[in-house]
Image (tube, rainbow, N blue to C red; front, side):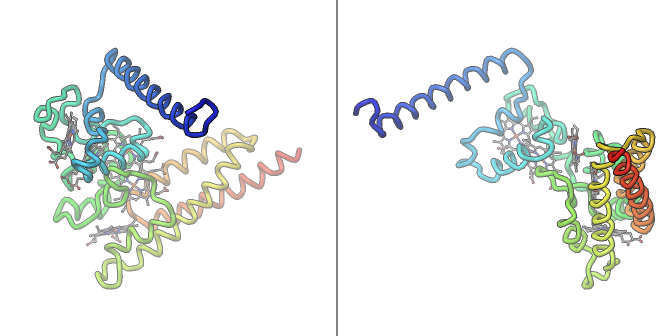
Length: 249
Ligand code: HEC
Ligand code: HEC
Ligand code: HEC
Ligand code: HEC
Ligand code: HEC
């Protein structure tokens, strides 16, 4: 095989890739050795699980790609356990307790306190506490693959329980879809207003009302949220009109 030969180049490329991988592994272990290393992630990310324990590996991948994986959370932020040991038994001390169905609002509420506060006032929470047939945070947002709920998904999320067959407020999915669509339109206006409006006091007021609305959503008092959404949409429309005039000046 001669230099310049296609196969030769491919082979040296592969070798340098391998070297780079080894280098990165060494680098990673030095960096990790220097400070605190999260053993939950270190162990659970092991690619060997792909073969030995594919379901477990899927859980890791779902987490890794989720808003939480990207934000740098650890498994222990929700599951507890001991993230400082490599010993399986010690690490796993009671890891399923914090994610028991009715405990989930408290687990998520450690960081999303406002959503939890709104949620505990809801009919959902009352029924969840009573007999566990109402949704908790993970029913709607997922467990490992936690994400925003997009307009396209909200209807099917609610339909799961609120449908003609169950006869449990079957109008809810349509209403939720309607409200979330309006919130989505607000999001569009909002990014324009936040960039271009001259009246920064108004921008701050609208921002606060918007945050309030997305939290209140979790009271699941849809009629109330619908009214507030419509009002806020009107206010943003006005602000956008003004911001467009400001731009032309
Ligand atoms: C040394 C490797 C290792 C470490 C460290 C580790 N895990 Fe695990 N984990 C596993 C394996 C392997 C399983 C599969 C089930 C088993 O063998 O217990 C598992 C299973 C789990 C499960 C499912 C348990 C069940 O009973 O279904 C959870 C939840 C979990 N780990 C969370 C954690 C958390 C949180 C941490 C850190 C505090 C952690 N793991 C640290 C290897 C590890
Ligand atoms: C945002 C919170 C959160 C984070 C972070 C998180 N989990 Fe979970 N995990 C949950 C919830 C909620 C469940 C659902 C429990 C259920 O269905 O009863 C769960 C379930 C699991 C299960 C299945 C347990 C079973 O027996 O059904 C495994 C395995 C698991 N998690 C492992 C992990 C690992 C490994 C990490 C880190 C890579 C992690 N989790 C990070 C919230 C989280
Ligand atoms: C240890 C703190 C922590 C815990 C516990 C936690 N989260 Fe989060 N969550 C975060 C962080 C940090 C973000 C990313 C926020 C950002 O990027 O602005 C986030 C983002 C989110 C988002 C996307 C919305 C947003 O503002 O980015 C949702 C939805 C969410 N979390 C739901 C949950 C649910 C459901 C649980 C419980 C299963 C949970 N979280 C547990 C810290 C946490
Ligand atoms: C019945 C379904 C459902 C339940 C239960 C639920 N949520 Fe939500 N959540 C949603 C929907 C739909 C949205 C999107 C609303 C929006 O865009 O304002 C949302 C939005 C969010 C957001 C993002 C807010 C933002 O910035 O737009 C977070 C964080 C969140 N939920 C956390 C939680 C937590 C924590 C719990 C449990 C205490 C919970 N949710 C329970 C449906 C649910
Ligand atoms: C896991 C099943 C389940 C899911 C999923 C679910 N709900 Fe519910 N919902 C319930 C139960 C159970 C009740 C309580 C009914 C009662 O009061 O007896 C309820 C009640 C409600 C109520 C209160 C009605 C009233 O006037 O008191 C609203 C509003 C509501 N849900 C909205 C939603 C929305 C919006 C979604 C989707 C984002 C959703 N629900 C998803 C089970 C569910």
